[in-house]
Image 1 (cartoon, rainbow, N blue to C red):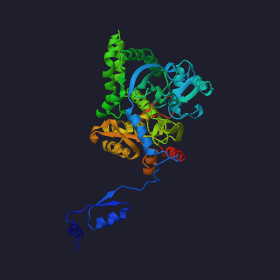
Image 2 (cartoon, rainbow, N blue to C red):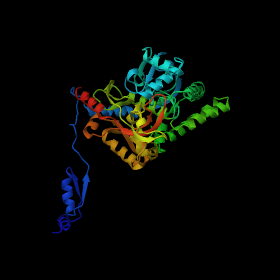
Image 3 (cartoon, rainbow, N blue to C red):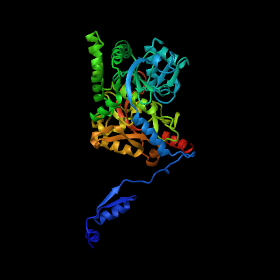
Image 4 (cartoon, helix red, strand yellow):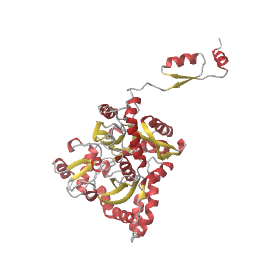
Length: 466
């Protein structure tokens, strides 16, 4: 019997069958020369949670969270010294990336960055003194996230460091971040040594005053939301690729820099420093994300993630409905590309607050906008494209300001929903740098990984109990 002819005669046109579930059905049809499309579909791994125990509609709560995030308008309004502008910061406080952690449990690069910061502050003469002071209990350690701040990699902010001040003009809240030092042996990767301290001092004494003077002359500040939106159209994802965004920032600040400088050589060095560091804008894309997300916290019943952060030992998330509570799992291992002379065995587990970009709907969520990112973190352009498509499966919404040309200007995936992560088993994609596991060495590569499942399981269980 001619099966294709029979089916075509029955329905009057060629048929294609979609198969959901067991592959044995499609194989049987294929053996009979019937065209079959196998659909990768699985039933939800957990039941869909629609209401909290108190009767709050979770979907409505999530819509409000995403509305606030999308309405946010982060603007760079100025700069300051950390101890003078960050709320509750003091002379003996060091802020760090990720969830709370003690000196004894800190990973190598975070310890290195703390020791380096204490030497930079003049509180210790050498690494041994710095380690002893850090262990003495005289220094208070706290997460950047507890102080409206954000820090890449080790995320160390010490009292004398200059910071950017970002204001969410829609809601009035502020976020803070240090200035990006560049790549290689730098403090945020745990690097120590005279060249590290000299660079930090130059940034404090030359770069910061120049930028501060310039920003004081820009009456309305610099609209970071607009720069991020433009950069996504120019091939950045604004986490591990910030080349276009850094160029846009130079265009925005250069006229004011020139008008407020009386020293052409200093001005040239300031512009060269920014121009030669493609990641300079990372320390602006991060507080921009923090400012947008923090305004969405406190919505009862929401299952949307508003913080993802790592301290190199643990990975933590927080929900819009429970902004004071961390859900924690061991930090993952990064798969990536390594600098010459380094290999996977040298790498520290995942570290840094920079996952705030994925949380806000760009970074790994927007990889389809930045196929060239795969030259830095590994993978292929096809993988980058598919990653963004997959992220729509676990998000509540799509951003109306951040769009992707390759997807016909579709909005980036926005609002990681713990319920969808649990139902699909799909974990958020993260782009990141890689620090050496030993203190003092610095950056060894960059790569990608997924967030650990355990913290989403814990958050989902807490949501079920609300």
